[in-house]
Amino acid sequence: MSFAFTSRLPLSRQAVDRDHEARATPDLLDRLWADASTRVLALHRGSALMSPTGGPARLRLLAPDREPSAELRLYLGRSLAPEESEPVGTRLVAAVLSDDAAAALEPDPARWASLRTVATALTDRDAGLLTETLGVVNWHGSHSHCPRCGTATLLETAGWTRRCPSCGGQVFPRTDPAVIVLITDADDRILLGSNALWENNRYSLLAGFVEPGESLEAAVIREMFEESGLRVTDPVYLGSQPWPFPASIMFGFTPSLADGQPASGLLPDGEEILDLRWFSRDELRAAGDSIILPGRSSIARAIIEHWMGEPLDFGPDEVHGWR
Image: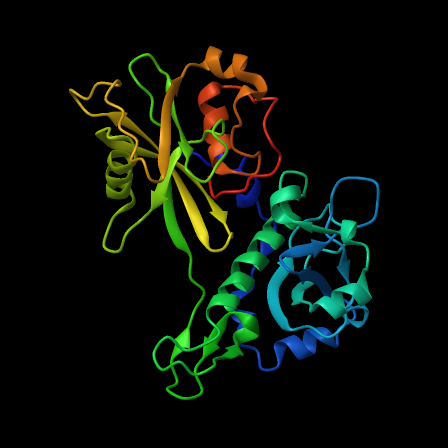
């Protein structure tokens, strides 16, 4: 395995020391809020405040005294990027704002952007920061109550855990693993599928969640048979990318068709996958806008371009599904 592929994935980039040990510091967030050198990432309804400059897309990180009161605060770590305007070592905090607080800070909706739309344009540090923030904030949104007794939980360790005041149970952020798979046939054509929730000309790689008690490799074999009717074997790991919409990490694999498995034996499940097609490189190059491929921020797009051996100059910048 090489990191050369992973380093090209927009949401796998990072230039932040998450500074795990500091999270347990008593009153850490209040201390950081009182420190003028701290910088704050403002988040509202999943969108981050962006810099108004006309240059490359950048997060607009503010001093704590510029921020209205936050509904939730999260310690992100220390900046490691020497090319950013903030010095290396700058401590970074995310602040989730209410509608009123966001409007007071920046009323222009064009200054707020979702990760889906700006992922490929952000710097390594900012892409990692926003991905980290969304993943943990989305987890908070779905774990406000104790899974054991139903009591409302309280934030601890600078936003990285929640504790139940009733039974004492502690809950940590969760990430759901999923596999995304590039299957090729004997003619080196790629298999793409069209999901039931998409336009009928949108195609992507086949993917699925890993089930409890299942290895990643076993999930590849099971999911590919369930969605396409094809038997595959020997899944080879390619790379991974977090996908915080709301809480996944995508593991890319390239298996082989099993011995005796004909490429013609396609059987879409009819519920999730409605159509399956084999594409050669020339067919994809010639397709242009007649088919819609995965957005540029997705690992699916990166895997397809890795197989192509070249970037594709068509397709959406934004991706709506998790593949």
